[in-house]
Length: 156
Image 1 (cartoon, rainbow, N blue to C red):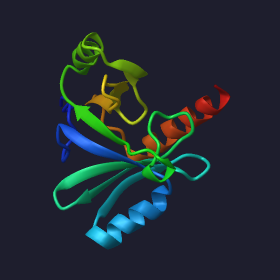
Image 2: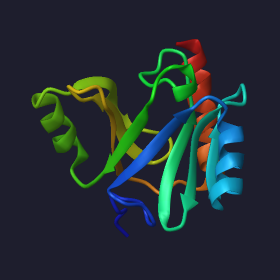
Image 3: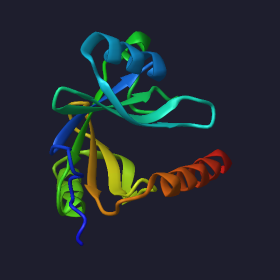
Image 4: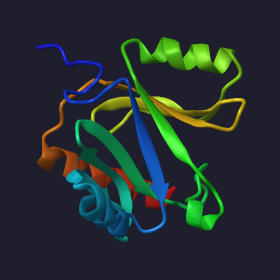
């Protein structure tokens, strides 16, 4: 069975909030808006690397702010939302955006969570994460791959 470029339950564009205090933010959205928390992946030091939650029929993504990342949380003086664009033929779209003037901030590549994914900064300062879902990854396999990826990152 072919894997859909946009994961089941997702839309073509999904907002990705960058915060300072990911766990507390998820708790707040749950209490304030009845958010249903889905996947939460943490770094070895406990920060939220990636979380997904739903408010009504809309999915949002969330991550803690990380040193050296393009986005800083509003509490740190920034105001950053990463726009996640998922679609078929993501390599072509990524290259088209670069040709149109976007700057590569994370090269497009196959990621441990099952997406072909990379990030760009548009000429107006907005961050775009472009992806295509290429593989459904079981939770235990994703945990194994994440641990391997974090171990590799800590050596880099």
